[in-house]
View: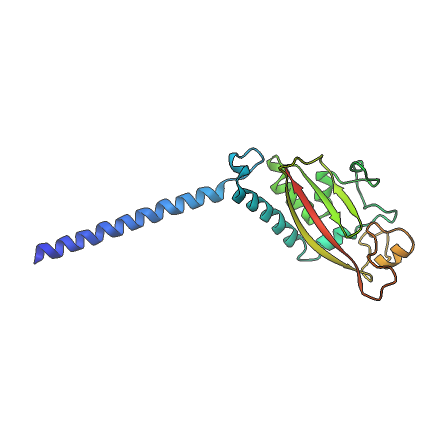
Length: 206
C-alpha cells in the first residue's frame, strides 16, 4: 500500500514539474516575441499578422494623440494662407502647399512625436495625409510608397465654431473658409449643421 502511495505522489510531482517547465518555456517565448522590434527589414514583415500589428500600432498612436484633442488641433493648425503652420519641406508631388519634415512634425504634434519615436528611429519611412470627401492633403512626405506599404487611419470631426489652432489667427474654421483662407475645405458651406468637415488622418508606412 505504501509503495502505491509513493508511486502516486512521485507521479504527481513529475506532472507538476512538467507543467511548471512548460509554463516557463511559454512565458519565455511570449517575452521574446514582445521584445522584438519590427523593422522594414524584419523577415516576417510580409506575414499578415505582422502587418496587422504594425497597422494597429499606428492606429493606437492616432487614438492616443487624439485623447486630449491634439490630433484635432493638428488638422486645424492652419497658416491662414491655405497651408499648415511651421512647415519646412517642399510640397508633395502634385500639391502646392509645403509639408513637414519628420523632426518638425514631431515638434508640432503628439502624433508626429509618437511616429518618430516608434517608426523613424527604427528605419521606417512614412507619409501623413489628410483626406476629406473632396480633398487630399499631404502634411508629411518622405517619398512615393511602394505597393507593399501599410496604411492606418483615424477619423477626426471638425466643427464650424472651432478655432484655428495657430496662435497668430483666432478665427473660427467657418470664418477662415468665408475669407477663402481655409487649409481644409468646408464640407457644405451655408449648411446649418455644426460640422465643418470630417477628416481622415492617414498614415502610410513602408
